[in-house]
Structures are given as structure tokens and as C-alpha cells.
Length: 599
Image 1: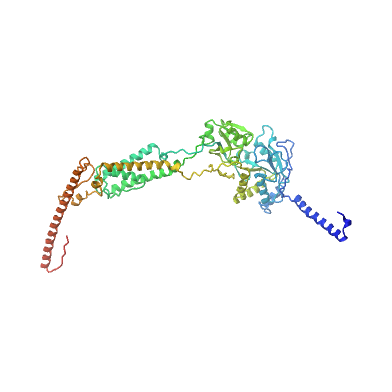
Image 2 (image 1 turned 135 degrees about the vertical axis):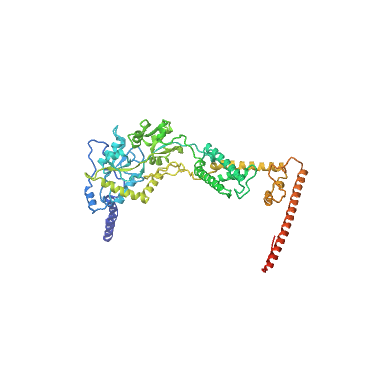
């Protein structure tokens, strides 16, 4: 500061340092001011009021670029490179997706997903927009003007209208053209959530079939067992097992097992094989149908407070629905499909959800993309007391819009360029990442649910509950019934053992009624029958008498075996005599051979 105190050499060094310092600060400042892609707080270039009759259109001609594209000298990807695009953004309280008032410039931090999508498009297409955009104040829309008229005006006065415009037939017919959608505008219903908790249904495993079907299945099991029992009595060779008896209960048991897929029949005759195949195929179809329907009945889901299948069902029940007014696509589509619908029109999205909490409306009529954003906000869904109800009413997507103009100013070229870059953003996952950041910025309440992507085509109706896992509440009924039957069987077995302590001696092991088949009825030996209900099944006599009867039966069997041995000895002697005679005859004929006869 005091040059008189410095030597000439020092004064020269100080002057050079001052010049370098000035250059060091001026160069970045100049670059910052001249860099068109800088994301500073740029003010809008145009603030023309919506529907202003004296307004001059800001839409510019790109016909020369379109001609170069058609001539092949310019690719579609680079068709807007170097162009200073003139989009229009929206400000107002309708939704927090729009710029918030009072608006003076773009926010430097968290400008919103619409601005971020535009920045990504500009980087890919090589164009600029932050120094040439316009802002339309939605709060200044004249009374009676609909959203369709706002769309038509903004696309006529700007290169592109940047909002979440729903693509509908009515708007296309008005001359609007839409690039690839990046917002799920499908129409859904939102209503009060169900109360938490599960209701245990012990008989839920019977739900797949009606009562009439179960009765028919039981009758079929009984009839099948009885018919096979009759076949066995009609022809003893019907089955390779001994399933006959006097009552056919064993046939009924095996027929019941066939319902579970365990077929233990072993038919040995043709008619029995045909019958068993028919029965097995019948139970296969019944079992498959039961298995296919069982899971949906075992899973016990929270039931919404309002039992509504969709918009049509809500209209039929006379329910009142809140939705944003102003001639929105949701309002127009629903009124056209159901002229008698009861709607309460609101000015903002938050007022829709507030209307349900205040009791003014039964349901909220909104878009899936809007619900995905509002469900994680405390001001719209406090306490997570709202949920998506019913099915999607109509599938729509939304995004930016332009004027359908391919000849006057050639604005359709802008649509084609945006369409290309948006498809690439969706395929590369860039759009999904932008939505993820948007949800993270706006989430103020955690409802234990994953937010569904708002990209086009999303239509997941779940609220994040893992319904694929069957809990103890789901499967508890069949366990209770099973262990009840096990307990009943054990008690019955204990009571039967206590009533007849010789049950294991008298009836244990396999039945010995094959003795009669061994004799084949021709040897005159006595037969022994141990079937329940026969004369030897007397549980009312004293214990000593039962032992005496057992001894008598054993003695009879011993005598029977002795008689059989004597008969075998006689047969052996006769065989030896016949062999001796044959030997003598063959020796007499000169053919001496050793013959061994074994009995």
C-alpha cells in the first residue's frame, strides 16, 4: 500500500502479483457467466400469464434442423444440439412437484424431479434451457379454464410444456403430442386402511371347496370303497391283497387314502383295473384343484374397511370420492364412464386426502404415481391410515407434452428427440434413480411399504406385505384339526385295550384264514376263523374261559397239522411205488435209467 517504502524491484513484484491475483478471480467469474450449462439460480426469461390474450408465442421454429435430419446430414440424437430450448414450467400450490411461490429463480438445491429430468435431457441432447425457460402460475388461471385448455395454450406458446400431463385420447385430439411417458398416471382408489391383526380361521383349509362339493367327495369315497368290496366278494381274484371281510371297512379306508394321492389298491382283473384307474384319475383332478385353490384361502390378509372392488363398484354403492377439479383427466374419464358418480372436487392433492380424514369423502380418486408420492408424506397420510383399495380403473402414463406440429414450426422434432432420450433413460435405469432420489427427499413418514416406481407401466397393487409366507395364523387351523384327531385316536386305542386285555393275543399278527386255502376244501381238515364278531370273539366271559378257548383252538390246530402230515406220508409212499413200477418197466424194455422221485 505504501509504494514509497518499496524498492523498485519489490514494486515490480508487487504489481505482477496484483495482476495475477486479478486474473485468478476474473477467469472463473467470466467462465461462470458465459457457461450456458451452469446450474446457478437462473431466473425465468418468460412470465407470460396463462391465457393472456395479448401474449406473443415463444415457440421457435426447428424446421431447418428437421430438414437436415430428413436429409441424413443430422442424426435424431444430435438434432437439438446447440439449441436454446424454450420450455415452460409451472408454479403453484396444486402439487409440490411444481415450483413453489414466491418464485424468483430455480432452486439451487433439490429443484425437483421435473427440473432434474430436463437437465438430464439437455446433457444427452446437447441443448440448453435454463436461460430461456418460462414459468406459468397455475394460481392465476382464469375461472372456468380447464387443464386441457392450459395444456393447449402452453404447447402453443412454448417449445415444450414440462409437467406430468396424462396422455389421453381427448388431449391427443386437441393437438397435443406426448413423448415417452415417465409417470404412472393410472387411475386408482385410496381409502381407509384395514385394522392391523389377523383373524384365525380353524376351518380355512376347507375353503377351496363348497359344502356341496365336500359332500359329493365323501359320498364318492364311500361308494368307491363299497363297490370295490363288492367286486372282491364277487371275484376273489379282484385284488392281490386280502381286503374282503364281512364289512368292507378296509376298502373304505384305502378309498379315503386315495383322495390324498396314496392309492394302495392292487387290482388283478381287467374290470378292477378299469375301476381303480377311473377312481385314481378322479381323485387326481380333485386333489389338483384343491391344491391350486388352497393357498389363496389359507393366506389371511387384512381386509380394508371399505369392501370395494374398484371405481365401478364404488359408484354402484354410492360412495363419495375426492379428486382434483379443473377438468383433469381423472375427472373427465370417470364422469364419462359413470355419469352419476359422486365427486368432491378439490384445489390441491393434499385436500383430497384431508377430505377422507375429515369425513367429506369415502375415497380418494387419484393416480398411482401421485399415491406413490403422497403415501410417504405425513401431511397426506399421517399414521399410515390410508391404503390403495381395489383394482386399477384405467391405465395411463404421463410426462411432457408438445404441439403436434410437423410442418409450420416443426415442433414434432422436439417430441422425437425427447422420446429417444427418455427411452434410453428408462432402459439405463436413470429415471428410476431420479425417482428414488425424489422419494428420499419427500419422505416424512415410514409406512413399512416399498414405494412403487412411477415409471410408465407400473401397476403393482401391493402395499409391500409379503403374502408369499404362510404364518402360524394362516396354517393354524389344519394343525389344530390334525392334533385333535390324533388325540381322539389315541384315547380310542387306550379305551379298547383296557376293555379287552387279550386283544393283542387273540387278534395280533396276521390272520390265519389261509389254512382253508391250503386245504383247498378237499382234505377235510377243520378251518379256523378269527374275524371280529365270530363265536370265539367273546369279551364277556371270564379270563379263565378265554384261556381255555385259546387252548382248545391250539389243540385243534395241532390235530389238523398231524392229519396233514399223515396224508403227506401216504402220498410219499404212493409216489415211491409208482416210481418203482416205472423203473421196472423201463428195465424190461432195455432202457435202464435212474429215476429219482421226490415227494
